[in-house]
Image (cartoon, rainbow, N blue to C red; front, side):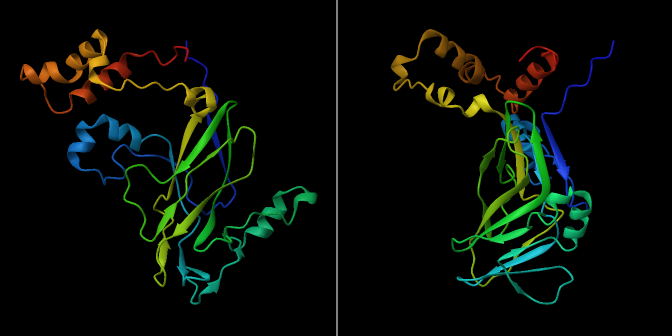
Length: 257
């Protein structure tokens, strides 16, 4: 008997239809990982694939002169000073879909923030998560960073707040155009159970300060994982990855969390 489909942990709502939709992040970081890492390093590939890639809503370029941010987009021949800018043509489409009292409230695509060199950019998406889940928004894991900017990280409790999925970028170059491509992810959205970053969880840390305080189980586990295979000459490349994949295959996908 087929199991009923589980409800999604995250649902994305595409408001800017022309923007590329979210895409499951890739274990090989879009082919940028070294071949040995992609094949043998399960820790790296698991982190790379954890979440969904998000993309800029269109091909745009930012320029910061140290005081004012300017912007332009492919097909436009001039630079415009940035205060707040909407996606071209979005407002009438948004107003046609929105209830009458919400017309005129389409989110801006770009906003220059008061702090020097900071710009807020909207992905063109709204998001909602299952109860008890949040989204960690961060730069794509293990992808080379985009030149000229750094993405701030943030945790959005999207089960309680429904609205535009955006991030803040800090421009790191003055006088040099910073280009964002619509086919290149600039954010990664990762699902987090709220308990993972709750105060009781983060306060529940312990420290064993010296190896003299390791107990028998610690030494046994170290021998199993690292020292034993090395001493016997049995340690092979990717041993951790093989064991982790076997363990995941053996786990029942319908077992309670």
